[in-house]
Length: 84
Image (cartoon, rainbow, N blue to C red; front, side, top):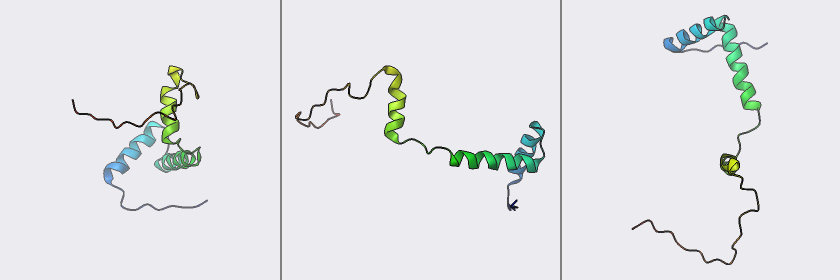
């Protein structure tokens, strides 16, 4: 197993980690190993979805399915103005 040494950790961060470890009934060292394991596993998980996929997921509950919008390939492009 590898060993890591982390220097210059703020006192308030150290104290917070110590309290967190105590709440979980772990040593501070084991708590830090758990935090690192969780962070590494999250990095290895599926990559975050792209913007289009996230937007689609937000509106999925409204029932719009792919292909339900009519395409208008010959429609003229109009500039949008925001002045009254």
